[in-house]
Image 1: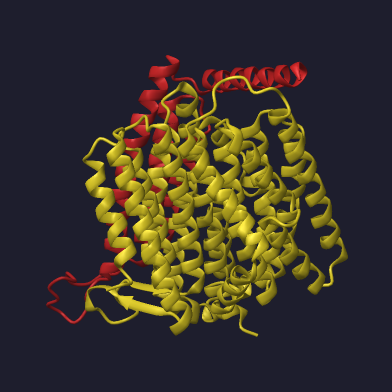
Image 2: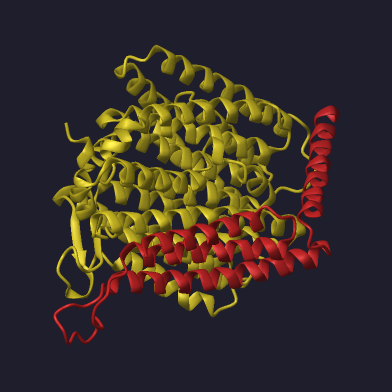
Length: 126
Length: 456
């Protein structure tokens, strides 16, 4: 079981990292979500135990409620963050008319060149 | 009751303000007032903690160790008051210039909630939750201004720091798996029993998570793009307030939970810190725009904090805390004053430049002095030389920037007086720290002693 969990976490994390290195914004976003899910699975794998329902224990063994509540919290947080990143991606697309990260990086570079020129010009004028 | 008061003011205030239109002046000033009230409440709580020692309360009437604990010591108070003050100054600055987005005041309050909560909490997972509250508000705030530039900055910031948060979460899960506790004190007690490899792994992953927040040398790649892209007030909040998470986190986790690993890894920390100092200073020297110079300078400045933590012991930790406080104030002042113009602003910028360079009588001198004391105490000639060279380089790049910006005839109108006054107040605070450093030095000495790993 431990091997199975670790393989699953590793595959999720690796796929996520691979996607995050892509130049497409949506792939990047999916990569982030996958890595977040790798972490959630990792929490479950770190402390999941068999047993009765913790909120109403019938037998003398209950499962550990803490990992479940931690994962639940982490899922909620990653859900909110995914929504936020999706909105950001949309605004980025709206302002650059492109989903390609390289084009956006180029816009950044052009901007910093303009900034540099302005700074140099004000220096030269003094 | 009083323990929860600062958090309650911030949290309830944030939720209420989120419903209102923050672009209106009254709403903005309400946020400033609430933030000021929370700061005062924290200071009152701090006086209490300073006199009577650590205060702890467990939520929901659970047993300590089972329920979520809030544990407040001098270290938490120092960082909480510092971050709240920085956010207060930045928000007052932005409100006096006119807020452009309706959510900004509420988000600032949420960020203050997250920061205060994570400084106060004694529970590792709760730490993560508050951490995310402040990070999420920071993601949104980086996009404030709504130009393509700010969106790019926000996207970079979110993508990189999300990864950092995930690392931190994995670290917490690993700690829980190895020790069976989430309460930071209990984890610390269990850690000596944990085998060496898992302990080193969890320590490393948590260190990486905090270094990403701090923008330490190999993890700094996101920082220049973000700090140059966002608006001045937000850059001040990020570098003066949010970066405190990294400093506090490394100190809290390093000393409370991983004292053994911190000791073993001190050479690595020293190396990373030194690389940060040199790299930051060199890059700052070669840049032209104010925000870019300041961004690289902040990479260099966190290097000093890390070097002080690596030196360790009461002297090293006290120096790290002192330097973190002074550095936060410096960066707030510089980012704020770089984005406005006017008579008061030029003088305030000069104060900040002197402070980064470590020239008396301003606050930066006290920070550098504490560092020198720590490195001389450590009997490390190379380190002392490095600190000296780093200081000299920062003197050069700060005054290059000053000359470029203020030794030319001012064209354009000067900014609203209220914004200039806010900048001047931060400058006066830095001068006050430099002229009368005794309270801050005593406070950082006490804060360093609170950490159990540091007790002689």
